[in-house]
Length: 295
Ligand code: L34
Image 1 (cartoon, rainbow, N blue to C red):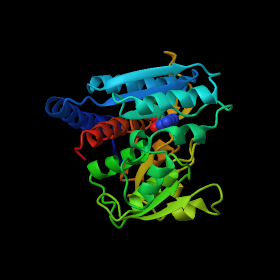
Image 2 (spheres, rainbow, N blue to C red):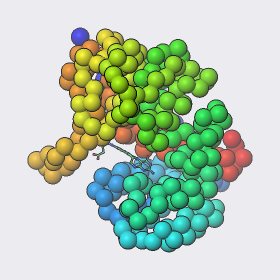
Image 3 (cartoon, helix red, strand yellow):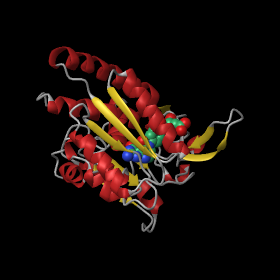
């Protein structure tokens, strides 16, 4: 038996249709156009590709969108001044600074300079704290995308044993925090495994839902998965180039092996990635709705 493939591409398209309708309504009823700025420092090829996709999607949805490219040697001070400018710009509802930033810039200092009400990544400590206490205004894009993939695929998260591999501030910790909340699409029992975990397989084998954000290919093989489990692969690893010169990607899960034992699995590409971008759009729409007094 082979697992059902959860298509992030399809679910993301469905959510974008919903957003598009809401954007039209917001424009017509309130005269408000959601505005998103994406700030890209330097020319890291992966970052360029993600930011380009974010801008393209924002335009397709009828947003006001600004792509702000900065040189790799921009000073921290200049970057902070730029953020201050967008914090004050009433046409901008969402500010995204693409990570990673160059080493000479203090990443946290930059992220903390973003007005929490415009923090559509939900990386600011105010938004992290809100998430933890169940009062979130924005959900971080990748975890939010993971939750939507589960819910919209009919997976019952309530009461499920969820195991997360990875404890990053962008994926592991926030996805765990989201799914343990007493809320619809959550209320799971969550375990987080990381590099300090003694026997990762002993945990993953108990998982009804396994979320993998380990950052390396083949971190999960079929021996580690319970038959019938739902496997969400958050990894994006560049493992060479295709004959057409495009980056060849793989996730953190041995897809071919694990799909023989899981009940559902997400592919890479076409899984979590497109969802991340779409949830950023939903957060930006919501940020605009907050300012219009609609949320
Ligand atoms: N500030 N920095 C900030 N916010 C984020 O949410 C991100 N992230 C991560 C890197 N830095 C960030 C992203 O946007 C990772 N990430 C991201 C976004 C989109 C995709 C992957 C990672 C994506 O669309 N992946 C496609 C393949 C794209 C390709 O060919 O390169 C996929 O189908 O998986």
